[in-house]
Length: 220
Ligand code: URA
Image 1 (cartoon, rainbow, N blue to C red):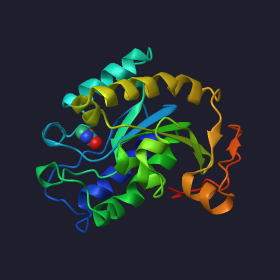
Image 2: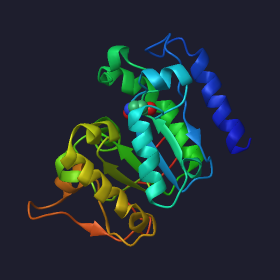
Image 3: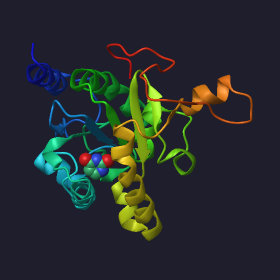
């Protein structure tokens, strides 16, 4: 099965999975270049996304598009999705059970697309990969997990509410080409570093793909 067919199959399974929470909101599966190097992962669809069944098409999405264009890329060059693929009522935060229910589908989606770099947008998406991570401490750093690089940044919607966050988000986006090209040293995930290290600090590692954990189907 080719990538496109494999992704279409996951989307079909999600449509008929009656156990998935947040039904009957529309399924917003994700879109973009299925052969991308960079995948952006947000939190959950909002009202605009639910209506159009497309991720990041509201004000936050316009900012995301602008930031992507600022790198000299087009939205169509990357892949964009969310950890939770239906809109929570009133745009409330996704619940742990909702994130867990959608997790196996996102894990398969990531495995099939196979991006070199995942940019997480906001706290929930960052904590999906690194439960111990803290946004103020860990954003703008590259982490190796399962043979992939994950780069957490602020959520665009948060940046629209704060000039300071906007400044930081733009700065972090500016680092993406270096992260992608392996010019920025990747760190071990926050939790692993904390467990394995003396209090004096973190280990860093070149992006040689030899992370502590092996990538494999459903790793994430
Ligand atoms: N916020 C998100 O996290 N995802 C979207 O798709 C839209 C807004």
